[in-house]
Image (cartoon, rainbow, N blue to C red):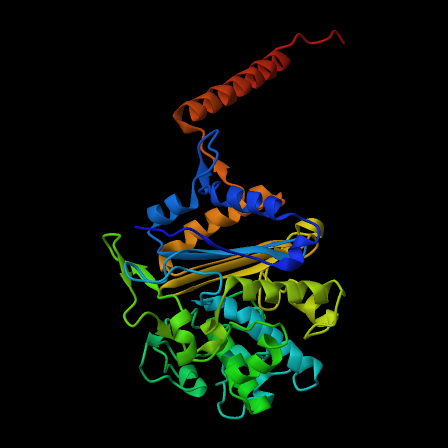
Length: 427
């Protein structure tokens, strides 16, 4: 696979305290120090182009966040296998389930405006569809807080989308199985357990449309994308024609590990709230930094500090509202991953330090590669070590460990025997 040289975009705001040379050195260090999840002793890292070829990922895009700004962004590879254009920092990718984090912020915006209540039953807001009740909802309600934290007991894990050019189901039709899934229903008692559910976010999508009277994509443009200057992002489905030339095509791996382009380039997603965002790593970094600045009280964001705190407060199983939350203090991290047919994405941010990364790829089978990039950024920028690889000691290392443990157990056994057989003291 031929992989063009990276196309680098540097952001002037980062140059006030740092030189171009220092940024370029860190970028080059990231590109040359990728490590898998398990490494051999002394392994120093691999070249990004080599790892893309090994994983058979046609295109990749990265934005690195350092000290609260996007320090650099770059694209690698091609938009389409064999005959695509070079990936640029401005190339569009499907963000898949990362869409849920932006949907959550849109809900919180409506909460602050007094339109919605996180703990009110969603039946109070739905107008064009009714969520069937049953034994599971006899005593507990499906609320927005539970939908956003995946604790509402809703089925349907995710959505695969539809072939490009096909008819897109309406929001209400998706809830009745119109996007190729089961009808979306309550299958366990709300509030009882964590159960990841894209179906729950489809309920949120229709609810937002019902209470605001706006199409979902238009609402998200007005309340989230435009205020955060996410100029190359959209929830529109299908992708607007003027943006098609800037979009990467998705790829999947067949049974024999061959890489095939998705027919038509990509699937379209009527389940916009759960999986419909088209964006770039740089735009997603702006979203992550928007959460951070509001949470720290550094600026007036599109939601207030209290709402940002709601997103970062764990409800169940390490999940806050719209995203997973981990650690405390400088190790506190937030982020989200996503997979659509042909695409994968992941972002993480340490809100206290202002360090993070966004990685997007045009291959379903790019998850391992994306995490290798995250590990490289972690090493170069000195993160807490949440993604550090495990060391494979090899056969000799395991034999040595067995011998050492056997020796410790033998010595402990000898000491115990000597204590047990010691002469009794005269009475």
